[in-house]
Image 1 (tube, rainbow, N blue to C red):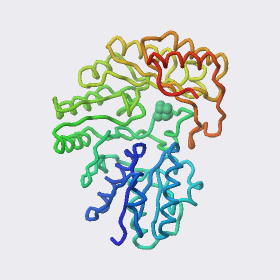
Image 2 (cartoon, rainbow, N blue to C red):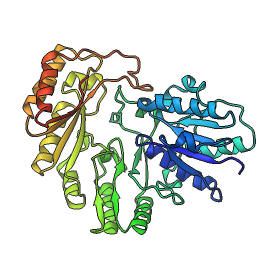
Image 3 (cartoon, helix red, strand yellow):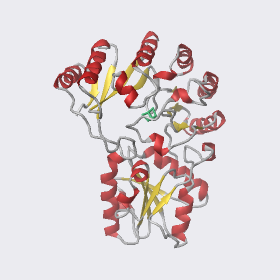
Image 4 (spheres, helix red, strand yellow):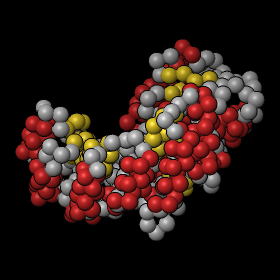
Length: 379
Ligand code: SF4
């Protein structure tokens, strides 16, 4: 090939770049490719290269800046961007990138790279095709080894109004099979002699969801991975970079986690501790289910991190006070991860305006921050 393909990786996009690298290896098994990071990209990418970007909304500015700098460096560099922000706001990026790709990238990358090499680019925005079987693509690239969490589930049962996932991955949930995951774990073990099995899933309890939590499928997954890893690694389930929806938490699920997994920390997304807000946000779980899940995990000596978003649209004095009461009630037992509300492009609430967080709630959060029970920011 007469043009080099260069993937531009940073800590935020590393999972999606890994997916694209694996798809590239499948499409062009005889071709070499390159990976650089934001610090080195300007010097590394040279005349005639294809620079591949992937960006979430929170890091889009630095991606735009780098692409524009590369275009100034050489008109023959072709820059292409995909990822959540490109999928939500493709038109806003056409001035800064030659090609803007929306949706899923695994099948798209082969077409676009071929079109570039055949001098056949007659589009500035192109839509990715949905991958029907996630097992068709490795999670870990083989030529340039890059290990990390394994995407377990694509899509989400819930349709939370502040989240882009339902629009990004509509339709039925898709899963990676246990056999596929076993193969990736064996590869990681072969390379390093140990493996850290972490999973990407909006809700890990939805694995092969079948009108309810599928404990059999989850046990098959966890027992298979444990059988491979034995003591040469760790298994993390329902924790970063995954979450657990309280609706899926039962004593039986926790028993499986205790038996097979290593994590003693669980991340639960709550966002607002008001039932009214849970309904407005179209979340699956109410406060009762969430508190029941917290109790079950605490009984089993797990540490709990609860995500809360401050400044959500439609919060009022009453709903904010419910969140304050929740924080008081669970003081000392859980840790709060605070996020300021930032409307997410591609979400149902992308145009909604944030609300003002009451002074007494901000004060409470600051006082807990001082003793390590809160991290993150409220504003
Ligand atoms: S916030 Fe989490 S649970 Fe809600 S739709 Fe997004 S990924 Fe699903």
